[in-house]
Amino acid sequence: MQPATRPLLRLEVATPGRVPYAEAVGWQERLVDRRLAGGRDALLLLEHPPVYTLGRGADPIYLGGAATGGVPVVRTHRGGQVTYHGPGQLVGYPIVDLRAFRTDVRWYVTMIEDVLIGALGTFGIGAGRREGFRGVWVEGRKIASIGIAVRRWVAWHGFALNVADDLAPFARITPCGISGVEMTSVTREGGASDVAAVLPVVLAEFVARFGYAGWDPLDVARAE
Image (cartoon, rainbow, N blue to C red; front, side, top):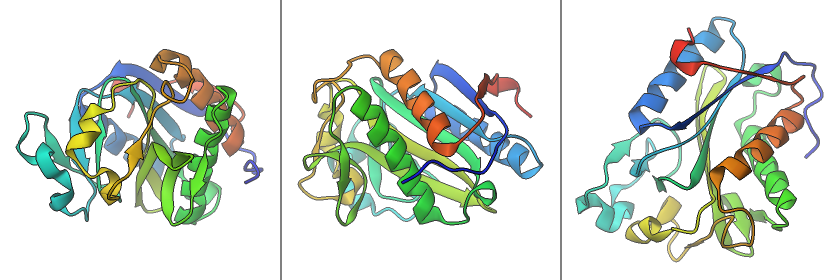
């Protein structure tokens, strides 16, 4: 898909490191309100402590062994089924007003897939799509998941890209409700092993793909 061509203001970006899931959701809520009030698009790029999340309509049956384990389980606003977030995974939460692009959720998800596919290509990983499924795949193995929410055409929540090698927490669940799915990571596919190395590549691809003029740092804790 071609980059967006409509001239836009600069994107605001926060890279706060490891953030508890509930705190990141609170930040997103404030940024959505700010965007609806005329503020700028924003992007949070971070990691979470271990947590399993269920989409708004997800079936708890897919939690499997995670339902009785010691890792927190959170029902959230995004679409999709169950997934895992934890250290070594780059999580991106774009807060984007789709009215500046296209009021088309399917188009937006495809754009995010394109961002991740392009970023993975930088590391020599031939990622792509899998017919009938969302997210990003490498020869049938899932490397990134996408689940979004939309409020008055402002999109939030976003994507999770597995970077590090530890994928064991996914074995306790049925990731994304797909039986038999094999999860993979940037490291396992021969790329970088550190989120800090992957983050700037994903950021550059996001800015270019969506056609922003550039980006500015955001102190998300103070954003109003």
